[in-house]
Length: 251
Image (cartoon, rainbow, N blue to C red; front, side, top):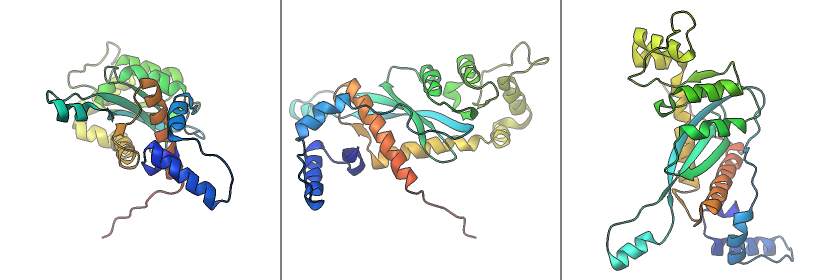
């Protein structure tokens, strides 16, 4: 985590740790950078990154991280079509505190909706509201959220082609009510009514991750990349706990 916090490769991190040991007057050996790299695959980090107290609001989204490798070097030396490889980092963020509750790194072929249930299972507190963009609209998502907390509010914009269910007149679902409000007030009116603007806070968390941790993954295998991404999210929570900027509107 120290390497990710300072944005340095393993070799400079080895030197940094050695300097810290000397400054502290500790006669402790520092493993070499190769040992750090090999042991990183077996590093255990709790999948629950932050314990919530009481009902918690959750915003879910995903972003792409580039896999760091030799692709650009081979292109420069041998020419040819550039090869790009990506991983998807899925985040569940508390919009009230900015903390990352849990995360999951998967290949770019994995669907966003398939990871909602596993991520919610790691949150051991009742859900107040779950927000996501229209990519997550669908009955399986609603079922996964209500299975976790039956009273949870689901704030996901229905697709433009969405229609109400057969029971909309007698027993409307949350999705039916969203469609009714959109029909009456339009999408902007619906967003204001349900507080959909809070969803943008997960994009702020993603921006902070890429600004502080980086846009790419240095590990070569998916297993070690998962560890690296989870450690990066843990570092983000540590930094968030130290303090967040306070903004005020000036007239």
